[in-house]
Length: 532
Image: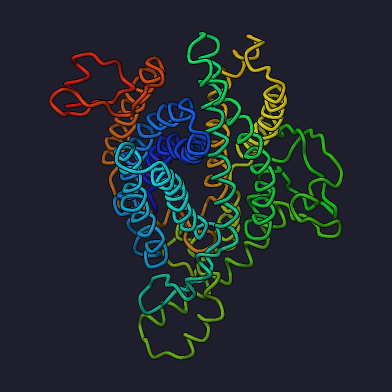
């Protein structure tokens, strides 16, 4: 029998490391392009304030990038450490984009970042600008490949299960790359990163204006952040709509859970604005619905119904029974690889094999499952509804809030009213954590909403975990959470120190003995020794 406590601890450990890691990724994506924009203005105008702006935000980018790399490495090891059967089962498919992402991050992106930091006095203005843009593109291409891998987990196209190797194998690598879910997820995720970078620069610039420091640099940074942030916030909402439409095509249960929709709504389906769970925590006891909006958003039509949870559970039972047939045929193939009849049956039913594996939680001999066990396994395909329902609405509300916020400041910037209202500046500074809340909620929806699957319809999460002991996971989870918390505190302290020091004339300053120190830090003897 499956030890679900071990599975849950494995999920908690991966979720903790992933959530910590994604504190740094969106800021890296956002700052990289805004640095490139500011340096482009510097090259075109020759005004030193834009050079200082690029140097200052580039220093903060570098600290954040280093921490993102450090936390990301651990995640990749966990695939073999905590999820070894997952690595065996789908490694032939998942491993390729993951390896390319590693090459992008550690070779391409890291090379350009080194040239960005150390090439200011060694490259021409245009040459260094090209490096900065390549740094931004490298960061985004790195994100592309990991999101292709994640998109395949949400919609496993271009692959097929091989009964001889007992693994999923690639049948069409182009289908994996151009997976509709992966592409929608990529553009939505990077746009959210751009909003994060814009909010970060805007908030710190508000702080400078409130303190009366670095006023010219702050105003110019705010103009760029307001413009870039408005365009990015609009993109997030539009591309988020595309992600919802794609999920409706490939992850109907996730959409039904996000809408707390237990019964199938006739076309065009309404959209639930607000709802309260019933006494048993199930179907809503009270709800406020907006007619037609749900159908327009999820199906982009007025004649397609939006299936509810109850209907999808019944459909899951059908697929589980088909998966039982596939599982029995697979056992016959393993006993006799020349059994052509078993192979024909397996080829017909293999897309439902993953649904058959859901029964492994209740019995080892899947083919002898009872009706009650089949019904319970089908019910397991329903993720926790209410956490998804509310996190989605908070995330969506924040998305529209960012549009309104940046629209107001874009208008104020066009009028030159950037430092005329201190309460608004304080509000701009206080909104600093909001994009991270929206992003973490977005990933929660994407990953938690996929349960009980680690690969949608192919591999149940409980079946993918390694056979670690309870204490192995408790100790490692405690260690990682403690370590990552310490690293996060150190990074925040370092970034606060850089912000307090403010912009400098040079990113790196040479000491008398030709050692280098970060000029953004105060030039104390201790910091010179640190740089040395």
